[in-house]
Each structure stands twice: as C-alpha cells, then as structure tokens.
Image (cartoon, rainbow, N blue to C red; front, side, top):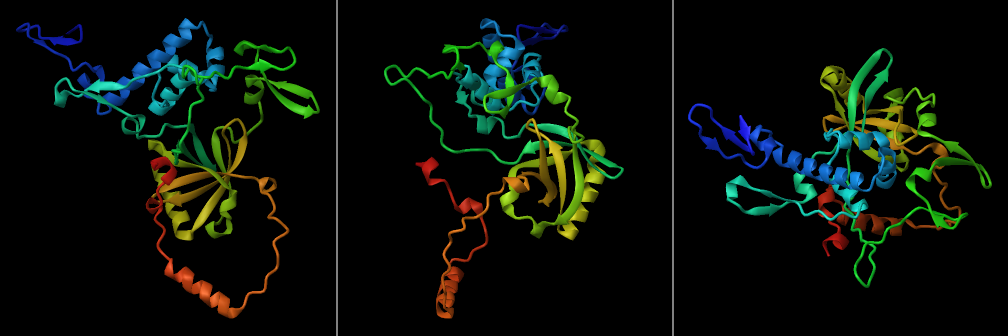
Length: 332
C-alpha cells in the first residue's frame, strides 16, 4: 500500500521512499514528461477556476476550441504537448519555472526546456484515408515547428506584460469573452452570425476523412501550391493497407490528391511518400496563387554569358543538406 508517496511492506513494515514522481514509480518511460504535463495542466485549471471562467470563456482566452478545454480539465493530456501547455500559461500571464529531481544525481535540480522534454509532436487530426472501398485509419502530426525568434511586448517602466483585450469600436468599451461571436461578412458592414453548431452541420464529406480524388505524377505539382505539412501515422488496424499504398506510390513516383476538413475549413491536400512514411501537404487552391509580375523586362543573353554563368553555378553545386544553413539571426 502507499502512504504519503512511499510504499509500505505489510510483512516487515519496511518503508520504501518513492521517487517523487508517481509516473516513474509506475515504470512509465515518459515519466518526466507526464509529470510536467500534469503540473502545467493543473496550473491552467487553477487559473480558470480562480477567474470564474466557463469552459467557453476559457476557450476564447486561450484561442482554442471548447473540447480542448474539456479534455485539459479532465486530465486527458495525451494530445497536448508541453509547448502547447506552456503557450496557454503565457496567454494567461502565468510564469512557470520547470525543474525536476534527477534520481541519478542526488538532490540536484535540473531545469528542462520544452524541446528536451517533449520531442514528440501531438496529434492534430484523426480520421481515415479513403479511396474506393478502402479505408485506412490515421492520425496527423505536425511535420515542422517554428523556431523563429519572438519578442514579448512589455511596459518599459516596470516590464509588465501588455494584455490585448477585446474592444468594441462602436460602444467604445472593453467586452467580455461571453459577448464575442463569429460572423461572416456578406456585404459592406453586413454580417451573418456563425456558431460552432453551424460549422459542425456543414455538409463536408471530408470532415473525418482524407478523401483521395486522383493520383498524379509528383513532378507535375509546383511547390508553390504546398502550404502546411503533416506526418501521417497509421493506426494498428490500418498498417497493412497503409504500407501497400505507400509502396505503390513510391514505385510509380505519384502523389494522391485529396480533400480534408481541417482548421475549420475544407482544404485541398497532397499525400506523398517520404522516407518510408506519408507526408500530407495542405495546398493552396488555384485561385489563391498570384500571377507573376508582368513587368519583367526581355533581355538578350549571349552564349558566352550563359557559359560563364554555368561555370559559376557548377562551382557552387552541392547535394542539398539543410543542416548546413543555420539561422544566424537566432544564433546571435
């Protein structure tokens, strides 16, 4: 049995001290990650309770859907990354100092950064790849992360954080989260209110599916159409058909064109093989691509100039390795 975080043997009454991390005591390999997720989630829950917010109000303040708040408050944290939880606390103006006891180093406290604690991306979408009579259950995970340098906006006098609060220009006053609604502009200063219920009722066949429409040769797609990238992970029941589709598209150098409902809208997307897995790229529609400038001048170029330029290009030719191009601005 357990008393105050320690294990007690009923035979000889020996008391064995716990590690201070219940997840480690349960032999969870990701014990440190789980402990910090639980700590951050509890801090968020306390702030929401103290400020008297409903789940809907909390969702507005944190810029997330209400079901995410419900999952967080119920301790269903598998879909939350530490980066995401820290981001929520920053929006709530709560400062957090992360540290944990390393049992291999005595009482030494080690500070941990989100990047070292939470390397795995969280699932952002669940559904199935469908074409014909085939359905492959999958999850989407972000394939990239933004590491650009960002700054905080502070009050110069006391370094207080600046809060951007919703303000009504018509009534010239601050408004509460419960007063906010979505609306679509149908004309100048004419709006139609849109609720969460309205969005859920939209007749989108792709709401929980990656509906493959056709297959095209990869070389036919101009990269200008690619937008956001996701890794596509199969669930256990779909591993075999996933692997079969992957092998076929790899051998034929083809890409699946599909549609998916994600980020509160239906998007065109491309499903392509990449290093023994699938990548899904959301894509711009044809009418979202701007035409190139029409004022490019026509210049006559001689064969000698082309040969000289080709020599310079050949001198700099190298296999592509993105790790050779560090971000000097971020490192500075």
